[in-house]
Amino acid sequence: MKSTFWFLSLSCFVLFSACNGGKVKELEKEVGLKNKIIEELEEQVEYLKTTNKSQIDVMSDLSIVSKTGAESIKESLENMSRQYGHIQDLTDRIQQKDSLNLALVMNLKRSLVDVNDEDVQVEVRGGKVHVSISDKMLFNSGSARLNTAAKSVLEKVATVINDHSGLDVMVEGHTDNQPISAGCINDNWDLSAKRATSVVRTLQDDHYVDPERLIAAGRSEFVPRDDNSTAAGRSKNRRTEIVIMPQLDQFFKLLESPTLDN
Image (cartoon, helix red, strand yellow):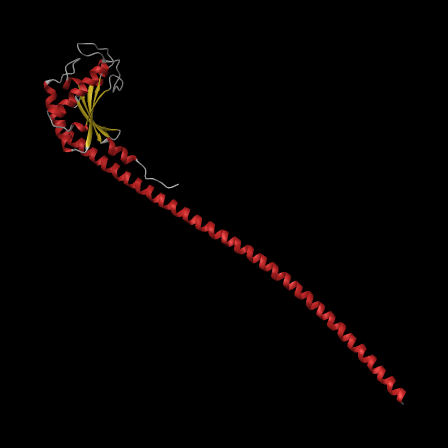
């Protein structure tokens, strides 16, 4: 009986141990799976950390690029605005100059209404008002001394010039291509320059045009209006042109572009 009891006890212990061993193995297996899952999750966490850092770095770079790009765009827009303002101002000034030229032409033609159109022509060329006066209206042949008829013509022109004190006046002497050498005149260069100087002196001395506004220029035979091979053409080429134009310093200032940033 006693032996039977020990046998049963031993059997129960063996069976219990066997059952517990199976449970342990199952638990160990389950723990192993959990650990593997944990390792995989930890690997994913590390990957996400690395990826997130890379994304942050990229976003930081993009932020810098975006800021720099925005500053560049802002500067470009400001430069364009200044350039547009300059162009608009230039356009306005050109329109004003055109209106002034028109008024000058009308005033000059009104003043010279009693002068033969063949002897005095008033026109706008190259943005400047040109008063072209034939040589016979101002000088005797081959001479740089003004004749009596010149006084009336130049007085009328000077009146208009004095009414527009903000403009410069260039007096150009022109000749034909026929050689000349008479008295104190050496050649056509000399003749054209001396005729221009005679007109400038009269505008200053007799008609009180500010000398700072006056320019005397001899052009000789090299800017003809017509063909020098005919008598009629040579007659047109022998002339004095009074050119009324914007003051040069103001003109060059007008053409200056605004400073643009790089």
